[in-house]
Length: 154
Length: 275
Image (tube, rainbow over all chains, first blue to last red; front, side):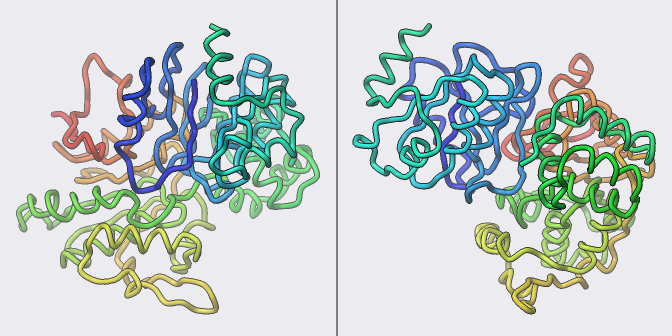
């Protein structure tokens, strides 16, 4: 599982620790070229883009921000879609800009499954609504429904 | 946006190798593909074939291409805690007589963000004239850019914040001027820097280097090239010389049975050559 969230550039630590308190699976901020392993979650580190590279590895990048964001959700989605194609599920949650919308379209174009958190439930609707404008998403789910869906697929 | 397939990318690598003897075959594929697609978009090229032709025929285009393909460092004083460590722990630990013939090497400069940051730090420590800084560049375009002092305004804001967190003894504003809505860095900072035009083989690398600053460059290489380059850097370091890489880079996996580097500072990813 790959997690990409907009976060402060200069705050390097604390986030993964906070998420880990709530998580049953281990969460880490990967190093460049780390091997992806099942049953773990990988959080895009502060001030790096996180890509899926060949041979199931992570690749990090300090390339220019996309949609004012580094890490950019679009870039994580696009590279994951290129690597995993119809084996990928892309999920967009509440958020404050359009980042992720184009990426989710790429996930759909490559045959992946797309889910958007129900905008009614979102603290900020911009991200989910932008994604829905650009792509005919497969499911619009509440967080509880997303959780139920994900627990079923393993 | 033109999307390149694996066959297109192999063809680009082949052309560059045969025309310019520059080897991109061990660059990390995902970021290389993204950079290539950006070059195609920036130059308004219609398709991959147009890029093949331009690369084959136009060496000036290739020089600019190199500058575009190599991802520039993000902003000045990225990771302020590293720069504080250099100021408060690293340089004070070196006895003054050792500053004679003290070489610092930046193996790949594209935008000069790391170089100017280093020079500002050294100036504030009154060491700028005592040490020897060597900066390698891969393209004339990068060299011209760094020497011009130019710096994009959009990167300036974060750089100013970084400098404030670094707690330097001045303001970053004292090291650049705004001219026609563009930042021009104080080029006297780099007047003693020796520039070397090199390529990915690092065959012109300096020897007996005390400190190598090489952050967030190897992330654009695949593990094979990373191992080769680390070997090369290790050979350039003096005994117990230091290597600094990006905080999310790793040197594990290279010679792990017989490590050639040992960790000095885990938070900032600072290593020391083993001897």
